[in-house]
Amino acid sequence: MRRRTIALPVLFAGALAGCTGAGDPSSTASIVAAERVLQVTEVHETTGMTLLEGPTFGPDGSLYVVDVTAPPGAGKVLRIDLDDERVEPVWTDAASALTSAQFHPEDGRLYVTDFLSGSIRSMTAEGEDVRDVLTGSVDGVPMQPDDVAFGADGALYVTDAAGAQDPYWEASGRVVRVEPATGAATVLAGKLPSPNGIAFSPDHGELWVSLNTGNRIDRLTLTEDGAEVATAFPAIHASPGVGQVDSIAVDADGNLYVGLHSRPEILIYNTSGTLLQTVTVPEGIGAGLSSATNVAIAPGTNQAYATISGADGGFVYRFAALADGVAQ
Image (tube, rainbow, N blue to C red; front, side, top):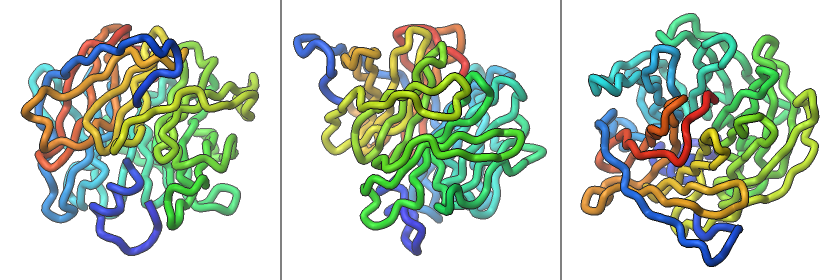
């Protein structure tokens, strides 16, 4: 995404947005079809699209999502009762483009990233007591935060497109660490091609970062205090054709669930880089769906829920994960 006047559909199709594994080349990944649970949103007349992101389970067991392209007045944070298949708007404002959401494991608040303003905010599960956690530039560069994960130290680890300019695929992105109490921010890594998804391994020993225009997933380890990168290297290279790697979820076994932008599929890798499974939408209903951005696995179960959007609207699909979910 670029900070200039441009139609919203072009803006988000470009920058918001795998696949042979890097492990055993003789292995064959299985293909499974996800089951549609419910429709969450319709295409907005104002923006000409809808794009669901940031699925996360709240303290009440509900699934929370954000709609990146929701116009002012429409729900930008939405709560979904999966049992009753009911959708309730939780929060909106006049100008934001929310790209992710996560509940902090310690304070129980919902943290969201606003790509357009460069802000990170927190709020209650009811969308109240909204607070700015981070606003403005970091090291003199405007933030364009995409996804967020929480470290064992309680800090936020954020992917940042870092004021991506024309052409937006140039490697100017960053990974930023933010102290939630003070908003103090530190750049951990830079010169990355549009970093998007971010997730810790279950033991917090590994930090996985997906690079949207690099179509790869990097593996980082951090120093004991979490304030610096100890090691980093490209771990998985994806080949999704017209698709681009999007957000990441991790299960209890450490497997990576990688969403795709511009292709309604989820790719599941193990930490050796082997593609274990591809999750698709059932044949015959995928024509109006173009992106499967992210996954949330209900903690303590193997029920995985994917946000899948396109010209037909925004939907939640369900499939069986390869291991139980863990709180992120």
